[in-house]
Length: 139
Image 1 (cartoon, rainbow, N blue to C red):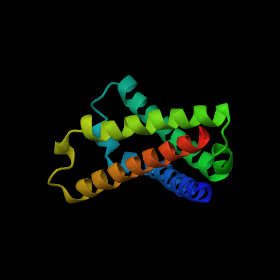
Image 2: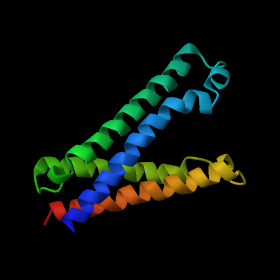
Image 3: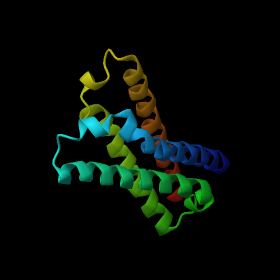
């Protein structure tokens, strides 16, 4: 089971690195030049800065899973603390996918619906893997 979890952590790591890179296209994809122009300078820059740090965090998570997967399997207090943090973070992200994003944003729109389904499945996948990781750590 441990080798399988390492593979899943590597898969998640690669997908998170890809997601971090995709954030670079957000300004173009979401027409930020037009969409954010009506916001105050503070609100516009908060969105840009928060997006950068989300991308950075996601990318660093990806690097963590690619470079330290074996260490995360160890039953150490640090590995458990990191795993609990990841469980909380990605669990909240999954909940937000359904309770915060309004379905009007994706329902009836092909691309947006596909993205909603893909990300719902991905957050669920992350959560299941981190639950399994935690169960190994406490054994």
